[in-house]
Image (cartoon, rainbow, N blue to C red; front, top):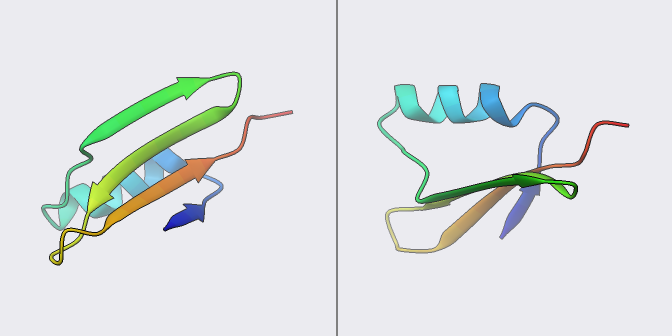
Length: 52
């Protein structure tokens, strides 16, 4: 599942406060993404589109 967010840094901070840390992160001309796994081992990707 991919969820588009407007502020990836804020979402990562919010999740980290709950003990949920990203497994992978990437940033480039496509924007930024971070992937997490939930308690059932489903991958969840947060994606922030590039700034215009």
